[in-house]
Length: 374
Image 1 (cartoon, rainbow, N blue to C red):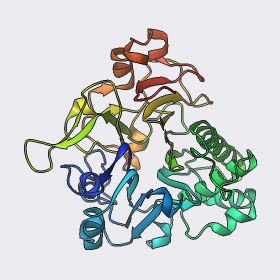
Image 2: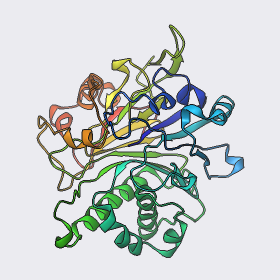
Image 3: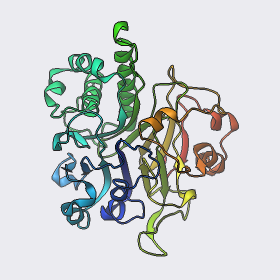
Image 4: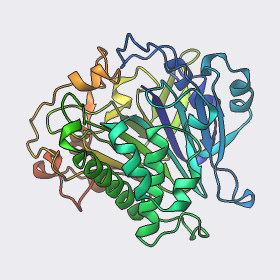
């Protein structure tokens, strides 16, 4: 399937320092995935997209550049990335599962100030698509330009936002919609997808795989919410990692980038399907079935409490489903986990109690890095 990257920084960064230059950049991942084992589609070469927010004077909408040319073969990507800076960037390389190869099917997608991308699939899609389309308001139905399950998931997210009293087409409030609004909307989107799958008639269920892999990322120009999710209580989700620190520097050779941490702050936060570097201690594994929120350079991890959440901290999920979808492979994940880093740091540098490291509470997230008070 796909690979994506999120950058949220206190300062703007040149796109090329994320997309082109690191040893395992998103461009490199388009032809050399280390956490993907898919002999059917060995490359993420079915198009790519880059989205980024510009100066406020240019408006709140993100700029989106997409192409069906493989990322490794697009000279315009190099030209753009070496001359463009932003403090909030999405990048995505695509391996198609639903929908044809076209610009309209390339991520990220946008509506007003909102930007959205997805890595994964919606289970039982051919029996879900019609019901999903009919469940959303005409504004969002008519806004779908492509044919992917991902863009329909975005339409569903927009519908959830509207029905919760936050019109995506309205003037953006100062400071954006807020991270709580975005997180609640993405959770409700997942809930509605699960319900649509549960409503598939029983006569269509024989031999049908209804498990979904829903690694979403959404931003409003101020806050970012990502999910790592699988609609299964026993399977592992598609890979997702994050890194935070005070500077992102190239040192010790070409492409050898490293996240530097001079203090407990998070001037820079990266979220990626695969780490951009081979510095294992730079990257933290996002737990399966959880959300990661970036708000005012603070990283928050919330567990997703639903029928697929497992409360046992030592429970080991099977990676077979994600492997079969080409979303995780034989490479070893980073050594650090959320529990490890939370134990080391906690809130304000204090250790997190064992009970919260194990599973947390719905309204008490892990706070793993912060530059500001929440």
